[in-house]
Structures are given as structure tokens and as C-alpha cells.
Image (cartoon, rainbow, N blue to C red; front, side, top):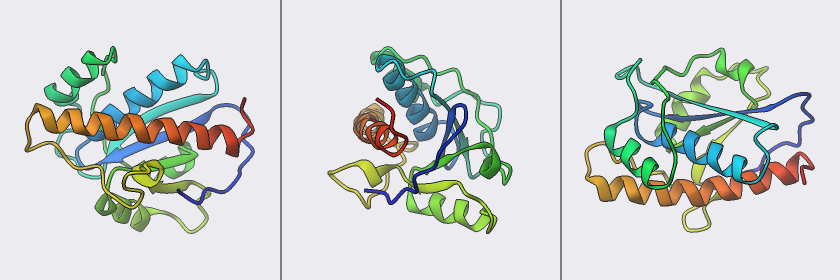
Length: 169
């Protein structure tokens, strides 16, 4: 499990999910996280967004397969891809990378004075705590469904950790 610092926040706790192009994994993670906090009555405490470390798809909606898998789980993805920028370290309390390559790219941009918690999404997945969320972009619909399962499991554990770290009941 990720080693997160306990931080006291005034206002909402801001979460940013990051993958490469911001059209497959990170918008799906954002949607799953948002759905789970809404179901738990915690939406007033958190806000979520997503971004990509590459600028391939800026302005585009999520991949149609991510949208389809999300819709099967009653999640509507409306996010438009954007690039991860250095100002995100000031804007977000937690930056969650989908894989080790993106984690590396994020940490390269991280200012020394940043207090943002940065870690891998699967830090909260008991099946592969050091693993990557696989990029389904060149795969089939079943690959997007597998990513959904990984993200749903990881987001649930992440939320529990946030509740513990911030004394949220």
C-alpha cells in the first residue's frame, strides 16, 4: 500500500488521475472514483480530474471503448483530454499515475517544495500492488473491461485509505 503523508486539508481533497494520453485509463479512473464517492455520500469532500503526460489527444473525449465500459457501469465520461502540467502539483493534493512510466514522468516535473502525494494507482490493488494499470489502447473491449476491474478495485481501497488518512467517517 502507498505510504501517504497525513495532511489536514481545508476544503475539498483534490485528486488527479494521470495516464499517457488521457483518453483510456485516467478518465475511467476519474469516473469510477467519482461514482464511488457519490455512492458513499462523500462527494462533498472530494473532487477528481484526469490528465495525460503526452499531448496526443488534447481536447478529445475518452476513447469510445472507455466510454462504453463506463456506461455499462452507469458512469458517463464527459472529460476532455488535457496535458499534465507542473501547476497540477499546486492544484491537487494527490496525483495518481496509472503506470511506472507515467509516474517517472510526473516525478521528473515535481518541484522540490511540492507537498502533493504522488503514487501508482495499483498501490491499492492487493492483486498487484507494484503493478501497472495496463494500457488498453491497442487492445479490444475485453482489455478495457479488465482495466475497469483493476480501477474499481484500486479506487475502492484508495477511498478507504483517504478516509483513514483524513479521519473521514
